[in-house]
Length: 130
Image 1 (cartoon, rainbow, N blue to C red):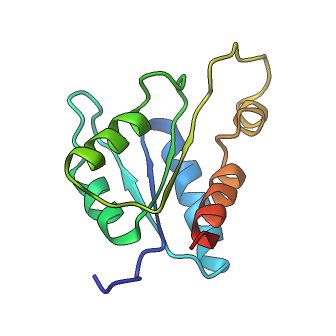
Image 2: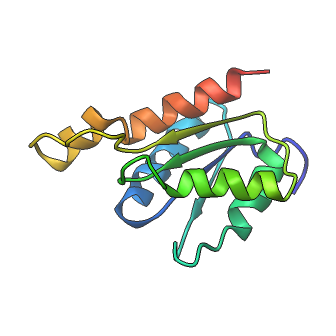
């Protein structure tokens, strides 16, 4: 793929993949080319496709509906470091450390910052960095 063809890599899995695709669609309307990488398995973690895309885009957004500690985003960043993949920035969107309140799935995704709108904001922030 031509250099600069990917502005940001969005990695997700499970039910969050739909939010990633919605975000990529919105980003494309805003002139930002996002490649969505769906992880088919997380144990053992197959990060080849994600790291290939990251080597081009240099910017990573990982969106997952798990607690922050030990999240896949951390593992991807560690693997990128081990492989010497230079990056310009990363945003790990997850549920943090707290207890999740009650609400609808959409409300909870928005409240926790893991919905399509949060992914779009994270990608735009990264794309705007030099």
